[in-house]
Image 1: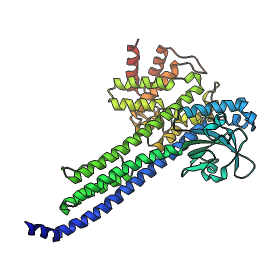
Image 2 (image 1 turned 90 degrees about the horizontal axis):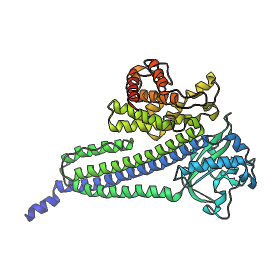
Image 3 (image 1 turned 90 degrees about the vertical axis):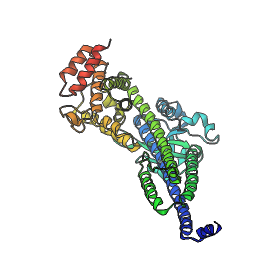
Image 4 (image 1 turned 60 degrees about the vertical axis):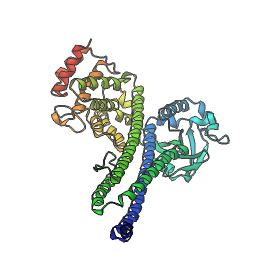
Length: 468
């Protein structure tokens, strides 16, 4: 027995096992390091992208003309223009809890020197630095921060944590433009370094856990026959490639109850955690978008609650058509933000009481495409994007923006089209009184097969007639 043990120590199997142990420990460490770096970079890039989106969408809500009229003196805080813009900024910050500071700067005549125009923190300077103020006209050396300077022409965000007079932050910037497209100021949003580091710490801890588990499993795998190891390793490499491509729902399927199976399980747990993190991030951004939709509707008292009513009608239709629960929830989410593109359209066009010109109609018709462009970078489900883009398509192919017809239109988008039109007909608008329920139903029937899907209209009318 003793001789057999000595033989094993000097055997080729023992040597190859030692080589495998060394190689797999190295490969496992590198693999986890790459995943850690990928995850950390992905989280940071996602955070920068969120800041740019929030800054960009917030900039669209600021009245450029009012901003020009804010007196650039300490007394400027008492002007109606300052108070109006300050109120908007505070509302935006209240619906985005991670945002610590939100403010507006504008260049001065001196290169690199900017000045504050609106900063809600002027009343609470203790929140920043008791020796610093941010009243209208107070100067700020923006030349230190290239991304801030870049924010004068396009949305941007710091590529690393930056330090200024008020501490260490990560910031996003976006230009505020007037109707002619001229930039009149830059809106900035800040989150504190502690919040960024907390996110990085979570990623770091998970990476260390996965690394530790990976190393333990690698040692065990090294004692197996190389032939058995080759297949599972290929599967692991394939899984790593999927993660590298962003497919966090990919799951490794390796049968057995050995260490390789344990490694696969740990890998799947890691991807599940990453997928859950991304899901939470999407949920947060969805809430931000929904808040922005409410801001859109708040700009026009006639459309207040429009999205909620359309979502309710859409849900009724989907349930009657036998949609599964997950699809109904997805439809409701999409419906609540289907008009997000209107955020990029001026209030003068949206709320115009007179007949719109052809040019103004062309601007209105752009809102489904603008909504898609706002949501696409955040990796929303394709079905939500499809609904936002397609809810103004017509059954006869004369709708917009893609002139799809019949079955080429997403069924969910067709449902939202009917619900959206019914709510528009039965609610008060600036340019007309609401239709009665019977009159609105008559319009649905009249346009069945031309504007609307006949199947959806029939089901919705059945629902309406059965309700009290």
